[in-house]
Image (cartoon, rainbow, N blue to C red; front, side, top):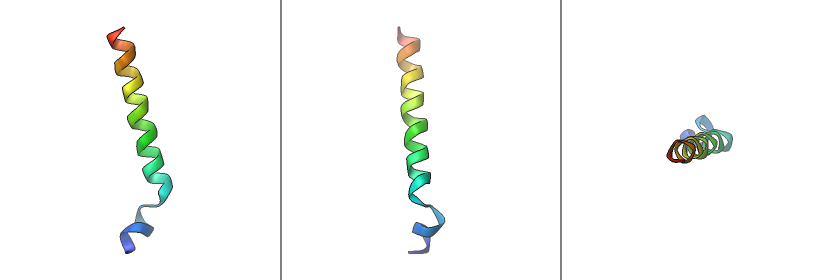
Length: 31
């Protein structure tokens, strides 16, 4: 359970932001 404390919820949120940000860049390139 220590992993949960090592990787707080904001870390997952930050990864999601990067993922959607990368997706937005890909969509821009396709246009």
